[in-house]
Image (cartoon, rainbow, N blue to C red; front, side, top):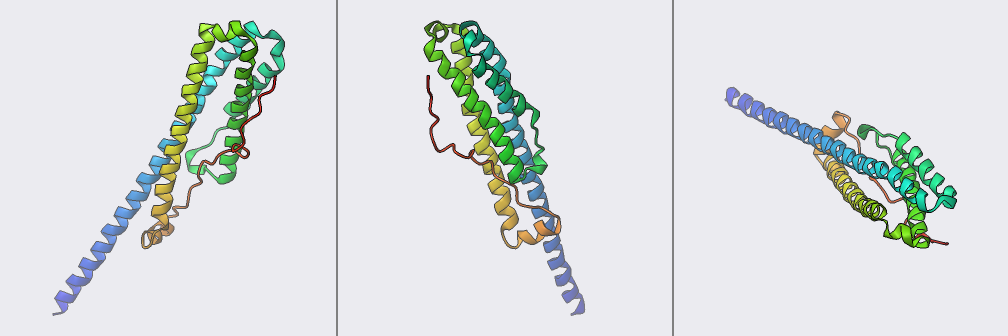
Length: 194
């Protein structure tokens, strides 16, 4: 009779240990998915950043007196490319700063593209049209990468907050991750003035 109780206790302990290991491994997998999703966000922003010098040089040939706007684009790109974030250190404050820098690039690009309206020859330039199409594609890829990142963060955060898995999460130091949020003021359409 004593052996039966011992076996039942050992079986329960084994089930709890296996469950705990399974939950731990699940959190590690979700954490890795967040890191992968973040690297895709960075990859798409880098792709956009790589297109900017070509776009600026194409516009320069047609709009030399728009130097201020061209300088703003180059400056915003330089600031954004200097800022790097590790996926394991994505605090809301750091994400907001990163998002702000990327928003400044987007805003400067918007002003640069608006300049093209004043230059019919530029609007007809094949290089400009191709670069503009590539930038539009980049913006779409950025939106998808950010959505995928937020989906990965949501899955991870829900997993570490649910009971009883939250016990395992707190035992091993798994903490909630920050979401990539829209830049402040992005709900208002930008004004383009000539």
